[in-house]
Image: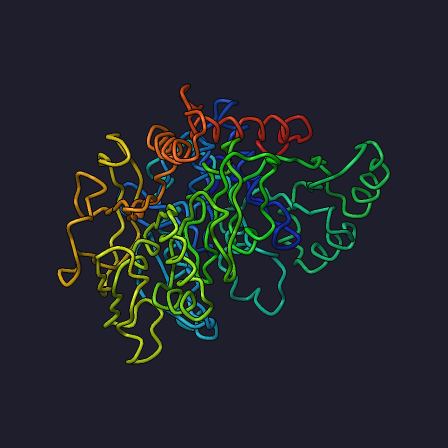
Length: 509
């Protein structure tokens, strides 16, 4: 029996739509997932199509958006690419990599996407839904929409909003952000642009990010309910908990709240930065202040700097050269600076980058082989197929410690035999996962392919202590609270705050 014939038998899915991008859909889904888990239900997150370079790799090596992985953590389950069957990873110039069910299957321009990928996209969404329900017949899907569901120039080819809602006959919530202003127009305008059969699916409205006394909106709530005949099921107050941003532009606004940090970290803001959730554990360290570096400057104010992952490594390395940051990083290293490169950042720290298949941002023959920053004697060749997998290894530096994480890259890195190799050491027992070296003058240069390395509490503590020792600061003697426990506590607190102000009972029937 196909899924369409079984719709009436499954637990009613809940779908969160928004009046716009940034209305709070992702955080609302995360909260609802945990609320239902705490009620003893079996929630599973789902977003048909997401566009993000902040990715996660599941246990089968499949890529998915980190936001759906976070929602899976809220459900207490292992993330799977089926929860985000279409992932578009922007490469610049209106070109994106297309990932279906975790696997890269091509690239497309924005202009050609719906012409070439709409039909196969809808099929992979249906395939994922069928698979989820076959393996979890008692689950309740908590579905996240994308942007606005009534972009009239796109609505006929929208894969992830009302098409999914109608296909599953979901109970839909419309979320709007009162902080942006114009909340009444947002709600009424969105509903007016829906067809009658679509509007019937909207079972509740949430007013998000309300500042001040909630009782002051009581008349506004009554007006909305009288006008729309849809109940306002929640007025969510402004929440200060910080969550991993889905779009890298949000990083510009993300600022540490620590006013007297003991350690300052500079993270290079690459134009094609990826996997920026790698640094969320550092955001949670009370002694650390993070600053995003976007232009050439003296880096000596930082105790260590990080070169993050990149979706277009060649392109970003050319950017570093042209803007002067490449030389700034060399100068910093020669002045006893500490540097860590992750994935694309590791590759850029090497001597050469070769892109024979034009996979990493090369625009011409002259860019197929370029120089790296040259601080590590390694060279990278980018291949046609990428490697995606979960990793468990043991670090050799700055301590011996079990390290878990994941890889997403299509570069193969090896030692450059034309360089002096005496000073470079393997970072891990698995020799291909990274390298490090210590400068004679002081300071270290290290690079790894492991995303999520800072989530490993013991390794993170030991690296921070390495920096603290060089600054003659007291070492972190007491083990810090596990980042994953912190993350789960934040999710639990978020769910508790939503639960105080949100009524889901009418949507669960």
